[in-house]
Image (cartoon, rainbow, N blue to C red; front, side):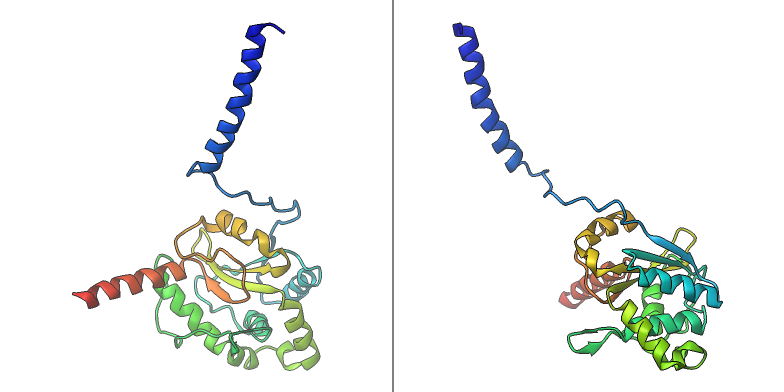
Length: 227
């Protein structure tokens, strides 16, 4: 090999480690994330107040579908006892820090306009405080212990997110914890990675952008208190 060829290979040998170090230390480098499997696609069900909806939803849960999206076509949680019974069954399926999964505010008398995250959060929290009572007062299957127990068990692997779609209607999104490692990617595709959004899956109920709103409110309140 001539002298020119030797210098060529020596240059490459020196360049490759430098490139590796440069890439490793680059502030724009993002950690590798395993891509989601091809079957991680939401199962979408339009809510209707009929037995057919119960059958479709239960089939998706029995199949352990990774993500189930319920389109309610309701801007407020006034969909009635059938869907409330499903939410109540989910609420019975797990605890956080020894407490039943509940909201922290009473049901307010407000009209959601689709842009008010505060009102949305209040509506969601108020619903979760009363959802079992609402189910008892109007759902036929909630009173059947065998059916209720089966559906509580089917919902246990899922968390629950209340989300406003493009039409300002509420979606219920159930994400299976068996696919928890793909939850951050799903959240990015759902609403973008916004400040305050959960990065890891946990079995609790959330509403989109509500955590960010709470943190912003706490920050502003803290500033006022320091004056």
